[in-house]
Length: 190
Ligand code: AMP
Image 1 (tube, rainbow, N blue to C red):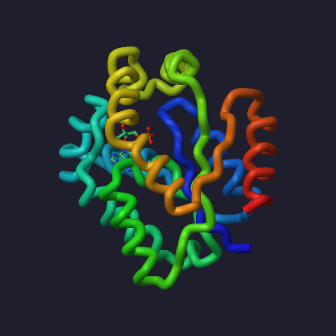
Image 2 (image 1 turned 45 degrees about the vertical axis):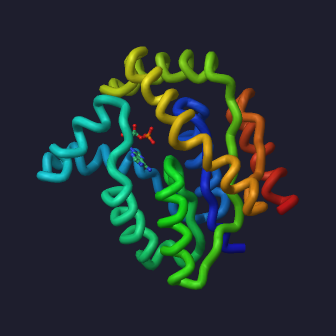
């Protein structure tokens, strides 16, 4: 099985943690657009400087920037055995862009995992993570902004992938291992 997967869910749902485990299990690359954006920012490139204001404000980086980064990454040899996208797509335009990238390669998605966690829990989790990670966008105001952005721009993807028959719903509340087993169980049924 060469699964081509998306991990969808609000900030703080535990996507990063689960993504590492899923990628290890299937031996596929874990592609986190958030990590890629932060790496660009850390390199202090001209693009990095431009991205900083979006990331620090909790806003989305423009679709064309993210899409070109993802298209390049998906073209790498290691993605032929499948991939796991974490934090992408985040808008309908990105989802359409991904579809056309995959269409060109005559590939399609295996499943879109929707990790469900209540807003209240998500805020608590990110505040804790912010203390540990030192991420500049893990402050209470920016977290709220990121949740609002998720509701407005990313939540419509749940309906989009559900209509396409590709959505797999997973309860994201519980121990890491427990949630991981739920994900594997849900994927097996696919
Ligand atoms: P994350 O680590 O996935 O929460 O991403 C951190 C930040 O990077 C987001 O708040 C956005 O500013 C930016 N970012 C990451 N992925 C995307 C994406 N797919 N589209 C737009 N912006 C993104």
